[in-house]
Length: 82
Image 1: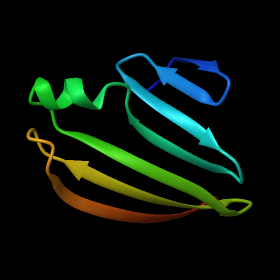
Image 2: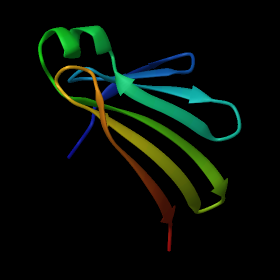
Image 3: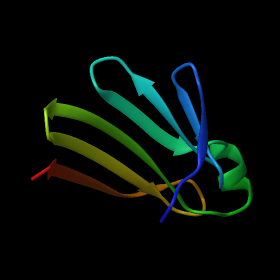
């Protein structure tokens, strides 16, 4: 999948309605550009929080919501670049 987006200050907005907010310390938060619209249109969505633990190693926490905006799962990832 190829993502194309634009950056303004610490906000990266992607085509298709997803955005990343870059935070200090190698962290970011990802979510739909308009969560209320996703809920109003009965679309499921996810929120993501990610941080770099060390060079080549990051952790991600992803929370998935259903079409009514209710949390249905949380997933934790520990990713290592080899």
